[in-house]
Image 1 (cartoon, helix red, strand yellow):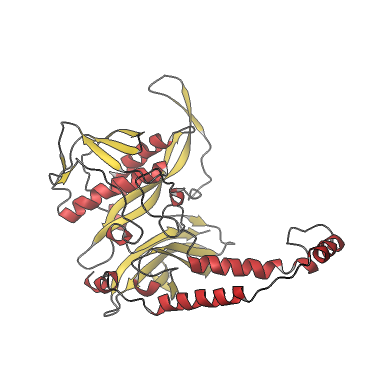
Image 2: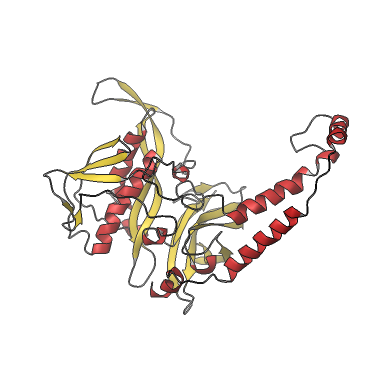
Length: 385
């Protein structure tokens, strides 16, 4: 990642795409200043009355002015970066971290990706009360430590939505514990995504949220042999922090308590402190440069529906490259722009159109500005039926 340090440096100067954004903002501001609406309320009301009721498509003649205004608003919103690509719903830029109970809207789960119709609620027996409990499948945001694609490799955090059956009235704290249990078990994705298993042998105890603080009880302090470097140990702690905050939808600070009164996680990270996410301009310290938020892993897309690849990226000059394969055959390639360049996290969208039935893999990459090599990559397999 040495070729990324220039634009992450505090003295980094804006690139051409930052300048384009600035020029667009200035142009929009000039256009707005030139708009001088007249007082035509009576005329407008008369025209609206003559046009009759508004239709589902937005009405007729006198109401056509709504469309260009809506389009202008959409352009301004996109340029301003007001949408947030899915820290956890497939959506945009992560909000600043606060020590208070700020809401994390992007942690909301998307529609469950399934290969079959979503299972209806089922009834199970509660081990605590012995009574019936209605459960249903829930998609939980879970973070894992994985390679970003470097030859070295370099590891960062990736987010997946994992299905789990929970009581239909499960509280955010119950969802947090369920998500943490999934986070410490990366084994199902180690072969396909290279996710590490730094918490091997760990057990999640109670999870509580009191006085603006998330407290996670761990059975042990973690095995240094499973998290072999200080950076992997740090990311192992952060994957639990991000997962817990995502599940309760608040960026509250997190404290760990370890059975046996151990004071250091992995023998090196003090538990006498709280942990949280980095600020939005330092997310690159934790999260991978490229995420794919849609389609989800093994999602089935209807053949009649255009496929749109969406994700998050922290990349140089906001530029990403992509490749679509059907089996081992390359179907299409191209490049796209994220909403903002590094060190900020932006949203990107790639329209693939309608695809014929089959199994596909889409790969999104950041290419090194130094030599064009792949410095970061994420791939997701999906099917069209």
